[in-house]
Length: 208
Image (cartoon, rainbow, N blue to C red; front, side):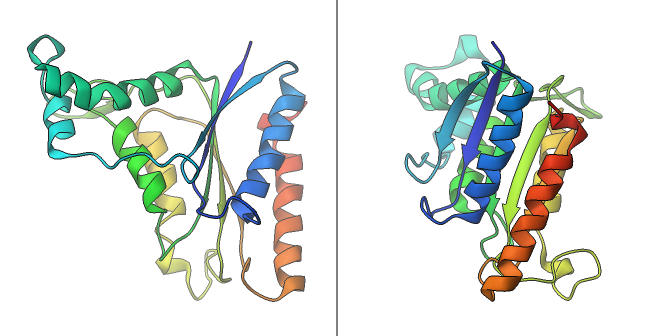
């Protein structure tokens, strides 16, 4: 059975536009993969702890040399990476908070972007190890004008960050769907959201 790993990060569980876009992407995935399963990580409902100095020490200590404390510190990272590796596709939903990702999403990222597990380094170059699966990202912006050429385009540190990070750990296919002006006038917000839904329907990678 194919599995989609879905990561939701909006602090708003109800009324979240990024979650609604995620619902549409998930529905398209299910239509393409009848009988597919979904593994959910709701980072607002069940926040992850941020990594600590002990976690970082464990990342750089060979498994056979880790103390019990280091083994405990890295257990959550191992579990989250296991979910990522086991999935056939990944869906991340995120609002923009202060021009970047929610801290809840950043906590997940810091647990899964890890040397020797999701990224290899040979002393000269990095190589992503999470390969052979697509990633889908749904982003909601409260304001407008983040698109290329827009007044706020230079302040979008979320979309390029997530795309570059996913490619860094090995994803070659990254589809990003955005909706702007979610905190603006109702008509403009609805138009943006409807356009995003049409983009999802037209994704060749999610054609049924």
